[in-house]
Amino acid sequence: MNNPFETAIAQLDQAARITPLDPKKLEQLKHSDRYTEVSIPVDMDDGSQKIFTGFRSQHNNARGPYKGGIRYHEQVSLDEVKALSFWMSFKNAVVNVPFGGGKGGVIVNPKKLSPGELERLSRGYIRKMYPILGPQLDVPAPDVNTNGQIMWWMLDEYQKITGSSSLATFTGKPIEHGGSQGREEATGFGGSVVLRETLRAELIKLPKEKTVAIQGFGNVATFFAESARSLGLKIVAVSDSKGGIYQPDGLDVGGVEKYKKKKGSVTNLPGAKNISNEELLALPVTVLVPAALENVLHVGNARKLEASIIIEMANGPTTNEADAIFTKRNVLVIPDILANSGGVATSYYEWYQNIHGESWNKEQVLAKLEKQMVQAFQDVLEVKKAHDTTFRNAAYILAASRIMDAMG
Image 1 (cartoon, rainbow, N blue to C red):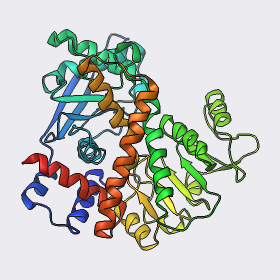
Image 2 (image 1 turned 135 degrees about the vertical axis):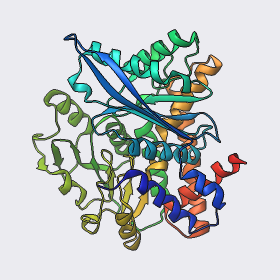
Image 3 (image 1 turned 180 degrees about the vertical axis):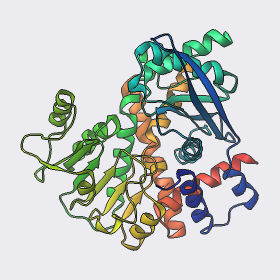
């Protein structure tokens, strides 16, 4: 498995070979400003105590407060949160919101914790991390296996410890506790806007009927699928951790959602063919959307892909070796730091509303987001054309330039 932080650095180095970037600032961007590791004691329901390890990586704050999620997962590591905080710095710069990059995590399988243990863990994380958090310092959000409820516990604990009444230290909160309308749809909706703009740009010849396969069918993928379908694209395959389904005539996205909620997986859907996650990646489709895990597109399967466009809705789904193969094969790869940046753009809107005591409705939020995603795509496309390079290199060049300008 590729080290995600090494992958991130290699992507920056690739961009730096295309255009001159300040070598001193470039070296600074390869290191986090700070990373913190803490031990979190948690009283368990059976009267025992367990010690959990938590992390926070603060990559760069030249453009504004550190910003990024907190994930709960058994595979969380320092290298992972360092890489993800790096990507957040670049993602925020690409979509042009005034944040830097941060990321946090706890090594835990949250499914093994009771609700009470989960709350005590979440509050314990904040008791250790609160000195490095704040509305103008570092603003966490939900990530893998965390949600609005966990953000509310964390905010409540932060307010108790600091005496602050500000809601803006955390985003992704429940609506009733200062969360933003439209946040749930934001990442998937933003990705579909980027797909729409990619198709409108007519950079490669495509068939009249455009088909889509999506690896993953969580929150991001379902909203992406609904938005893509509204654009006239045919969703022919989706998958989850248990496997995938394929229906060449097109899937009823709403029906698949209902089926998954009832059965716990998309597999065995009547009228669709069961396929593996690996088979999904090689389907004869126009657009492939990896929306689940890191490193799923690699040297072992990159040549088997038949898609003309890849929209990276997951973080880091493509290895550098696979990227090189796609470039040679003229496959358009829309990188994660552009494609899935709708979530953090809307986190910025939540932060802004909290800071200014405002409340926007869903239509206002999604209208602002659509405009911002269109601009981000156009900005990256302009750099791509200027340097005759890939979308990924263009996104990194644009982001690095913006961050370096702010570094002074």
